[in-house]
Each structure stands twice: as C-alpha cells, then as structure tokens.
Image (cartoon, rainbow, N blue to C red; front, side, top):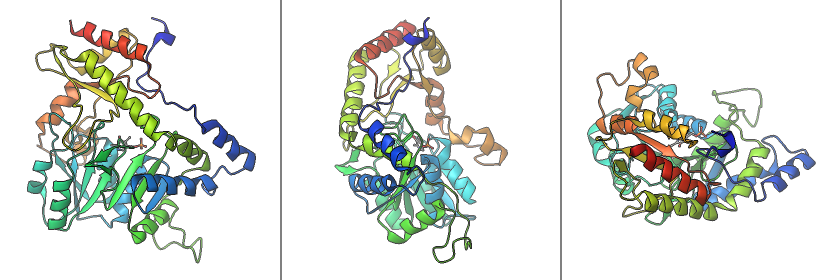
Length: 374
Ligand SMILES: *Cc1c(COP(=O)(O)O)cnc(C)c1O
C-alpha cells in the first residue's frame, strides 16, 4: 500500500502566523530562552487559563518534575495519582524521592476514579495529582473538597486539556500548580514544550528558579539548591503564540472530528466509543479513542496491526503504572491490581485524531475500523 495514502495518527496545523513569528526570531537573532516571545507566551497563555503566573519549560513531563519539587514534595511523602496515565506523572513523583500511590480509572470516561481516592490517603499523603484523560475533565469539585479537608495540594496535569473547561472554568485553573504540554499532538503545539501555571507568586518564583538551574540573582554561579535547565526557547514560544491565536478554532475542529467519528461509528458492534459529554464538560477529543468489547476475539494490538495494513495510523492506550517493569524493579506497586486500567490498556487504542485530519480521512478510518470488526 502506498505510503502517501497512509493516514498519520497525528498531524498538526501550522498554517497561521507560525512562519512569520519564527522568521522574526531569526531576523532579530532572538533564539534562546532570553527572547521576548517567552514572556509574551507565558502572559497570554496564563491569561487564557485564568492564572496569574505561567512558567514556560521544555516539555510537559519536566513541568511535572518542577511542580512536584516546587511544592516541597520529597522522601517520606506520598502522592496519589491515576495508574492510567503517561509515565511522566509517576516519574516526577519517584524522582523527587516520594512514593506514587495509585487509583484505578473509570470504565466510561477513563479518568481517575475519584471515589477511590479518600481510602488511599495516609498521614504521609502530600498531594493528589489530577490527570485529565483524552478530552474529558476529571470531576474536580469533590477532589478540591477532599484536598481542603485533608490539607493536600493539587497538582493538575492539564496536558490534554487546552481550551477545555470544567463547569465553565478553564482546565488548568484548579491546581495549586497546573501543567500543560505543547507536544505536536496536543491542542496547541510548540514542537516540544510545556508550561507550569499557578496563582501563588512564591511558587511561581520557585518554578522559575528550578527551570533555570537555581541561579541566584545576586550571585549567578553560586547555588543554594539544585535545579535543571528546562528552559523553553524563543523559537518554541514563537510557535506557541501563533498556535494560541487559533485555540478556539482548534477546539472546534477537534469537537467536529469527534462528533463525526461518533456519528459514523454509532451502533458498530464490539466498540466502546468516547463519551461525548458529562455533566460538566463537552469532550474536546484530544484523541479519538476506542475500546474493544470483551466479546471481540482479538485485542488492541491485533486491531492496530490490522488497521496499519489498511494504512491507518493508530496508537495504543497508556500502559498502567502498576504494570511498568521499571517500577516493579524498584519494588513499587507489588501485588496491586487495577482491573479497569488493565483491561483498557489491552483493549484500547486511538485512531487518527490530528488537527489536519480531513473528512475523507475520517471516513476512510471509519471504513477500516468497521472492516476489521466484521
Ligand atoms: C503529553 C502528556 C504529558 C507529557 O508531555 P510531554 O510534553 O510530551 O513531555 C504529560 N501528561 C499528560 C497527561 C500528557 O498527555
């Protein structure tokens, strides 16, 4: 089958002011993190999310590393996180020296099961890391109450939630610290990139310092603490500003894509489709995800391999944290079982969902999905 017929799982749209702003970086010579687009992007994106401070970093994973350390979390502490998420969440906790404590996910929204959290709180719990999955936000109000009652911090991973709201408030506005990623499959991209958001000036300063090797303003090469070089470049911020100009349009494109897929795939036997909406949000379909029913005689791996023979790009779901060899080797999560995450990891995958996807590509993807299920 010819390669140019292949439908990639993701393709970004870069046909706004991206080129213009990038050329400006090159013409002015501002290409490092000292360039003017960084501040502009931080200010504009935090205004959009309704936060006082934004700290741009090199990706969404390190945004979580900085968030955990900035909150003073470390050895002896526990952080409650979903088992069904990207490894970045657990890695940030483990690297800080703290212990990630897992909860399973909801079988319909695939978000962390909020009802399982309270039972996992111990005297060592310092924070709950809330991760919004695939396009629908976690039901966050009960979590905010829980956190208040137990004196816990909220870290909100909003990497898949640009432009999404929960009960009308922007996702990314709920955590003591919230984080975003601007990887090319997110709703807006900077190639690689991330941002940390907070309303607390001290936390914001701490994040800025951790991002920049903890240089001391008064004596540059003397360090009281260990930081990282997690700075974003002006080139990345240039892309970010151009993308942000179109965020509303991008959310519309994704919602339209999701609705179209759901309409064309409705009543297909053997498939669980994403939920279109909950009481507090309409899906923004970061990805268009499918889960095979138990009576389908093959798993996601086989489905993805069959779809690739039809030139359809796919990706598997996240693999649960308690089943990660790297954490098992560390002695973490031994004997734990989280059946919903285990099941969807094996039976779930997503189909082409990028911003540049055409109607014709959606229709071809749907025909292929129906074809492999017959
Ligand atoms: C993409 C993503 C990240 C990581 O972001 P990168 O920029 O790829 O490092 C973190 N958390 C979630 C939920 C994500 O989807």
